[in-house]
Image (cartoon, rainbow, N blue to C red; front, side):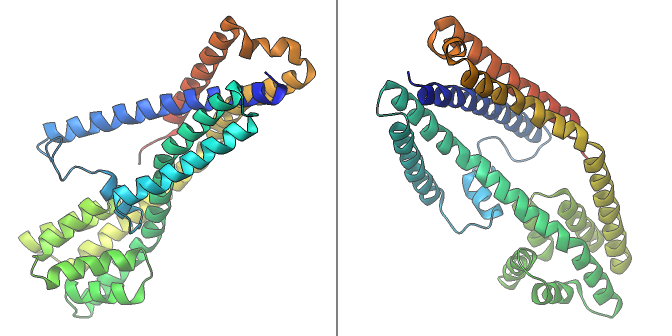
Length: 299
């Protein structure tokens, strides 16, 4: 194997092991959450209402079917595999690297989708607290909740505007407001939105001061967001440590390989070296996961 092939093989093995471990942990976490939801009387496991790729695409604001989304990423994975084979010199090492690169691209579509969803939800939350304030002021001035929702749909930008317009469209089609608000919280699974919609539904069923409820919910969400930002600031050192500890061994290997390739290359050519490389990559992935679990604090 050439120097380039050995470096690419090491990086490919590391990425593949890291991606496989993270994927397995995510699948386990989702199955555990689904089982807990079913045990609490929520949606049964395997039902059509369970969140799937279609709902994730909708949360990301993508007007695509799951089939079209997968076809697009399949083409990207094939292109990445071809690039990997060419970079590897069309030999056995190139085939292995191409396969790993293509597989990593294919699995990366879910990570890309999660990042897009997180970005859209963050934009939604930035607008949501202000929207609750607008609704509270509108109710004080004599407007109904429906009229305040129409004001929000007019004055705010996407993604909040699109979400509120969908709620209004459902109500125009005859869906009760309680059901429309509940469906909204299910489509956009955010705790802040769930708090607000639950408060409105309870108020409609039991009565109470709508403006006061909206102001209380807005203040609660505002305080939660403030606490969340403080926690993010306090855990910055831990998150940076995770990145450094995860990337430092990779950079050190590349540096040592450039200095003494005949010795370091044994980690990629000798069977015991490959075993140690896989073990080291797995340990790095596990360490990164546990560091992330420690610095991730739910608010």
